[in-house]
Image (tube, rainbow, N blue to C red; front, side, top):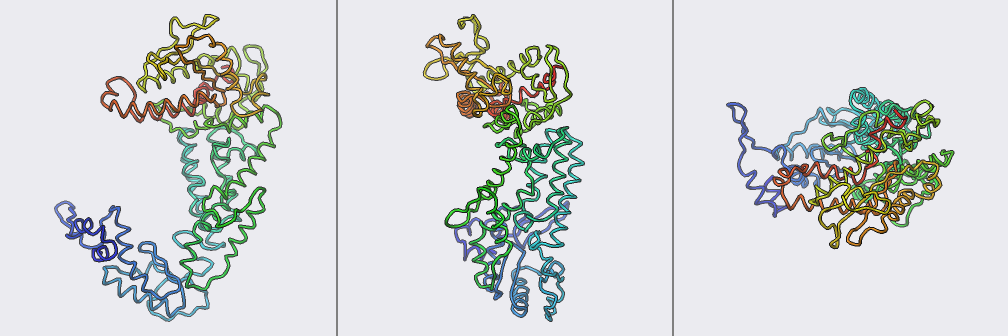
Length: 565
């Protein structure tokens, strides 16, 4: 191994020599085991050192197809040539300290293929249609069906366990781990686009979302839930919509490597890829660029996402529903789905808050129609609770938002006070807060927070014009009220729609505040930060991200107010 490093990677030889020139002693109780062969377990250079050592052996083989992934070697060609290469691997491998494990070796060949080599006869025989490579079936058929059945079974077991934990935790796990990411390797490596098990997998996902969020999803609402978070969904992607772009992206990104590997082999056109490419082209808006095929999966996924998004938009029958969907796809309005549920940072949501948040995002019914304490009839969607003047959460959510802004400023080393004395507007009311040292250009920062309802009758027409339009309108009104503020101050309106969007100046403020917090934490050091009563660096950073991107969660934590409870 050291000789191979010296000959092929000489710049690494001094470092590797100090690590492997002498045997390592492994202690187990009173026993000492001398580690004298191969790389050390856990060595980051281990894969490189192993591959570098066996590379000359692989290059000396005569098979038309020679693949090596660390200690997994695949040979393809005529029976006699492959048999000779197997013997060379056994002979040369023993000189390197490698031993061929016959019990793990497979022969993939047609049933009529005759094999007489004694070594190869000891290998297990696999039909071509049942072949797998690195855990992924190569063709459609029984083995691929079994692989998907196994994934469905694993998901079913995971669902049973997810039901035992909090909805927020379970929703994060199902989106980031147990759904599409769990089968990404299978979708990219195996032709699964037409496999019927994809529908079964999606049904399990849909039932899981319904159970975790305590919501009954219609077909259109499930389509919206399967959209990416930034487009108004929950980010739980349907594998039936991902299998085709995943396979095409994998084939396109490895096309040049495939040509190199198969250069000496007799190959035919990939009928599966051709059929899948034709199927992808049938999607509205799917156009291939000139030149090489794109390697990123997002390119192949975009036409399908766009088609689903159009279907969801068309299913919104009234202006209120269309406005709700538009607000859900506004920048950062769905970042509460991405926030880690850290209770000490104020990012933990109870199951009822998750139910209300998902219902507002997808346009679901929240409860039974009833008459509010203010005398107004509340429909099943419960939107009146967001604008009712007698709702107990109106003051609480405003105070929570103002408190988050104040604490974030203090964490950035900018002292701030709430409702400063002596600074009044024309109607005698004070702003929500003010910094006690200049924020920028020698001026103190004065801010005022307001929350407006995206779905209020008076705002629906404005909200339908674009995302965040209601927040901008409310911000403009705040600026008018504080038009006579002295020139020594900089006024910042923080207007937020209860569906999530903020006004543009508020977004910019939180971006700047985030940079200031990071700079402050790197400057003052951890010890001074703790002694000053501020939060830890990781806690401040996480909480700021939640303030900047996910302020809508503050409102949704007061979910009981939706129905006036």
